[in-house]
Length: 224
Image 1 (cartoon, helix red, strand yellow):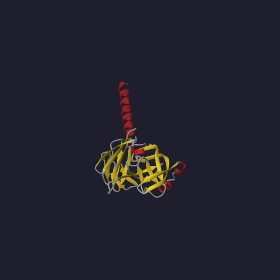
Image 2 (cartoon, one colour; image 1 turned 30 degrees about the horizontal axis):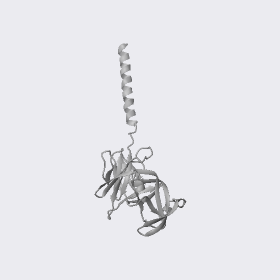
Image 3 (cartoon, one colour; image 1 turned 120 degrees about the horizontal axis):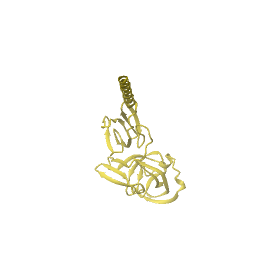
Image 4 (cartoon, one colour; image 1 turned 45 degrees about the horizontal axis):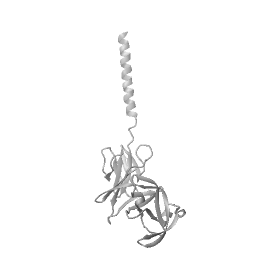
């Protein structure tokens, strides 16, 4: 009788072990936290699991198993565990949960030595240029109209620019995102006309980040 009880207990233990192993195999792996903070032709700057930004070239694979398949200034395609996913700048992750604002942004100098980046204003994609001489974020009325910004509700002012004195409107932007950094209620000015041709990241944004330059690479880190 005792031997029969032992056999039953042993059998139950084996069944439990088999069930546990099956459950472990069936359990999904922890979702990898992948955030795209920079996009360039043939390269993408990513933050994996909250680590330091790193630049991947097409075909390169990280230790975590993330491979970059394609990249341009609009999006990047990645492969992980046989799955493919296309991510835009600062959007999306492998695994599930919504993207949250990151703490850093990485910018590369163009052929003229200017630091530029794809980003967004109020959720609409724009192209930025870092300008420490600009007091605020600055954009043209043409660009403001393109992204649907109702800037004419702001105060009308005169601005002295390289193109002379121009009419402008003072306004505030609900959100400005550069790489993994997203700031809210950012002061800005909208110049009447087609200038500046590219949105300027001025000090109303830059005062809230630390800037570190290393040759043709600039890293912005949010202070608070």
